[in-house]
Image 1 (cartoon, rainbow, N blue to C red):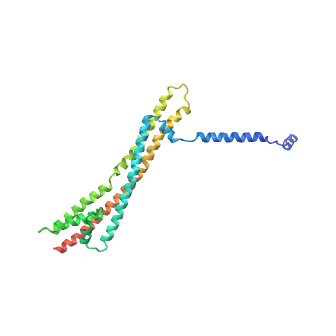
Image 2: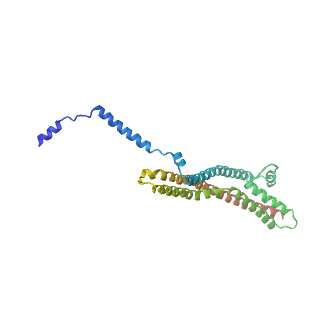
Length: 262
């Protein structure tokens, strides 16, 4: 037995012929290329070959996504400008400038004001208007200025919150709209199987792939909208707190001024 084992070990193992080795390598490469080609995903073809209801869902989601991005860029510019203008006005306000000069600058012609400057202008204008009346006490003057500042602050916040509701709706509804398109496409795919004698995965896969594109588009529209809504809502809330704090501080200044007038 040992002699047999020694003979086997001593025997030389002949390599495959060179032509056979090349043929095997080419076969492996061809199989890899075929696998890679079959794994490619053409989204455009899936959309074009989808059923009309699924295409309508995709078109609706595309419109919602484009509108959301337009609102996102515009809202970012508006909120950044509001924060920048608030910083600039607070710097002028707390630098020791006279209130009358700040009011004159705010009421210049051909100059639109917003944010903190609009709140200041409304409060100081109402305070001066009530102060010119005879027999009006300091409390009435202060309450009038506070009402004017609250009303102006509410209008400013409403302007900043404009179109945020659309982002919220797109973020919450888009996944369900995409899911509706997916369910409809899968239903159409399985309904088509009833007309076939043999049903394989290759028969069902294209229809299901077309339907799943609707879900992907729903998520593509919803995720940026939800992120932008949360971010912008937080910024608006911070600006609202900032406006309220300024109104309280300015009310204290007006209260001291009205007390000196008495």
